[in-house]
Image (cartoon, rainbow, N blue to C red):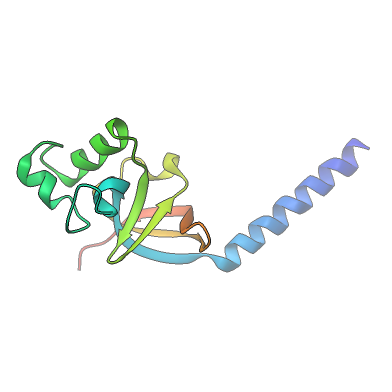
Length: 124
């Protein structure tokens, strides 16, 4: 019985992984906090206003980290007018305020990316 359950669980995991791999997309943008990216305390969907006032730190990184830790925000990928919630904070932490390339699966109903991989965006 135990071997059967293990085989079933393994088969399910393989099928899920195959499905995720087929739907993986690449997204480019900046890892940000939800407040700046969704214009809660920003007019430009950026850290620009907060950096001028120096109230949340002096860099995009410190602004995003401060807002996530102290204001209850969450990690998002800000890609122009599109803002996607990122579900894998364990992979994303350390990239706050930086331009990245995210490989993941978009859940359009939740507007959330299941992050499979994240790398710094190469400068042209």
